[in-house]
Length: 189
Image (cartoon, rainbow, N blue to C red; front, side):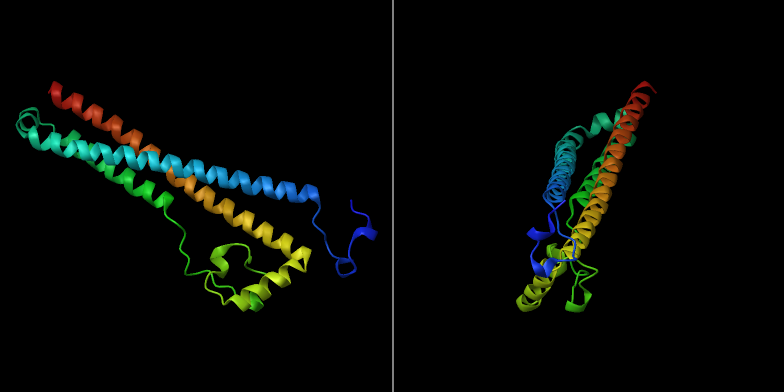
C-alpha cells in the first residue's frame, strides 16, 4: 500500500496503480501477445502445409489420371482436396486482422473504448486523441478501467482465434483420416 504523503495532491482520493498491479498488467499483456504469436504460427503451419499438399496434388493427379480412373480414386482425391481447401480457409480466417471500421472513439465516449488500443483511435484527429489520452492519464481509475477493457477484448479475440485453430486442426485430422480410409476402400474394392 502506498503512503498517502507520496501521492501527488491531484491524485488524492483517486486510485493509483501500484507496482505489483503494473507488473501483473505487463505480464498479462505479454502472455496474451505470446499466445497470439503461438496461435498465428499454428495457423501459418496449417496454411503452408495444406498449400503445399494442393500444389503437389494437382500435378500428381494430372499425370496419373489413368491410375486414378482404373483404381476409382476419385473420392479420396476429392476428400483430400476439400480438406486442404477448408483447412486453408479456416486458418486464414484465424489469422485475419480484426475489422477496424467499427472502432470510433469520440471525446464523450471515453468510458467505453480505450485510447491505448490503436483500433479505437486510428481514425481520430491528433488533437482529439491527445485530449483523450490526457484525460485518461490524469485519472488512474480510468486507466485501470481501460486496461481491464483492453485485457478483456484481447482475451475474447484470442479465444476466438484458438477456437478457429482448433476447428482447423479437427478438419485437417478428420479429412486426412477419411482420405486414408477412402483410399484403402477404393484400392481393396
